Image (cartoon, rainbow, N blue to C red; front, side, top):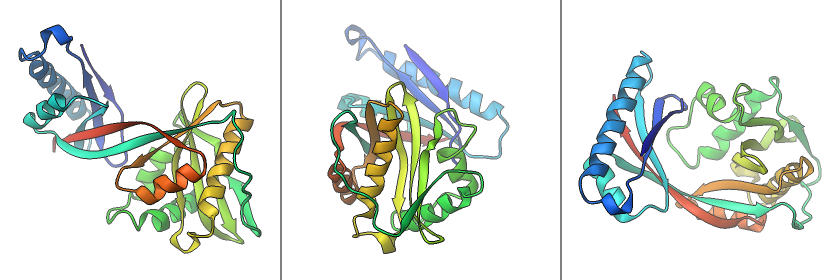
Length: 247
């Protein structure tokens, strides 16, 4: 069985591929044939959109066996990244850690939306040489038309008029709220602000009735993982992403 999910991303047209072969029928070429069909079908769908954006195929999987990754690489897919999902039980007590004195919190609004991007550029400028454009970042992370985006769970922190940190709230399934993206500007790191912002986000999740909080972290970002652990998050599982550019 296989399926394709179209999911426009930031600056790309993309499709996620997934498939399974019953254990009794593996190593007979069925998996390769299935992946070839998925590639052809997804590629045709993306190219039919007649978009100027690059087209990308992605395979995301949780804890898959090594023989699957060999198959993906044989078909020209390249390793992209591994992220770990971390979870926290919102029904358990959390550390009492308020924001540092003098800082204020604002929920997301169309008026302050550009300030979220300002924080993103500062916070993620230390992680990537190719930050997203403002329109791409907004489309992917804080798009009010996206049913998974929750403006009531998305907020920024200010020092006076200066935006210094943010947390974006998403809901992907019932009962769980996720920190879709989180950032603290470099000059504010090392003061306990990051942990306080995460606790603020979890308190808002719990107040809205969610039972579990989640987030993901790239395995090459151990500093962030330690920060999340201080806020109560614990490793749940990891997923791997492979990609193939069609352009």
